[in-house]
Image 1: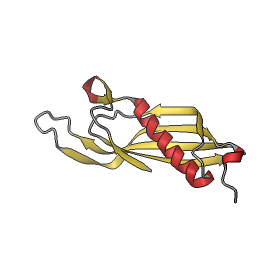
Image 2 (image 1 turned 90 degrees about the vertical axis):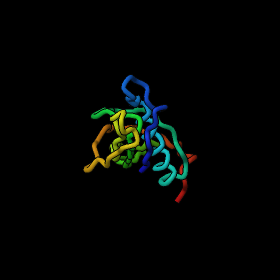
Image 3 (image 1 turned 180 degrees about the vertical axis):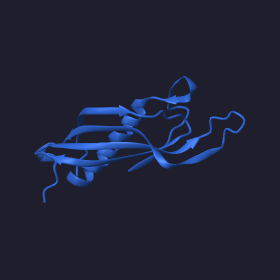
Image 4 (image 1 turned 180 degrees about the horizontal axis):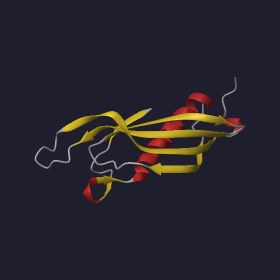
Length: 125
């Protein structure tokens, strides 16, 4: 799990909208940690088999990304990812520092990806 505050620098589109690629970068970080914990190596991200962007994310929002290894092959690891908005920054120009907890957290993106850890890089035992 990783939790990050999206900044205005993460916003790529008008209205302070964050680029979906920024969420995918978080999924890459989650995958790296999962692979290190399981195999002792960062591995390589090979492909996404599905990506769904479900709700907008804006600069000032806090996003939590989680992942789970759902299949283990000889060298491949299939990982399911979800990203949630857990705090929403203010959209009110009169109160720019205002924010609110999103309860329950809002699912903003989900994806399934495949990573590869070469056999010789995998932790033994």
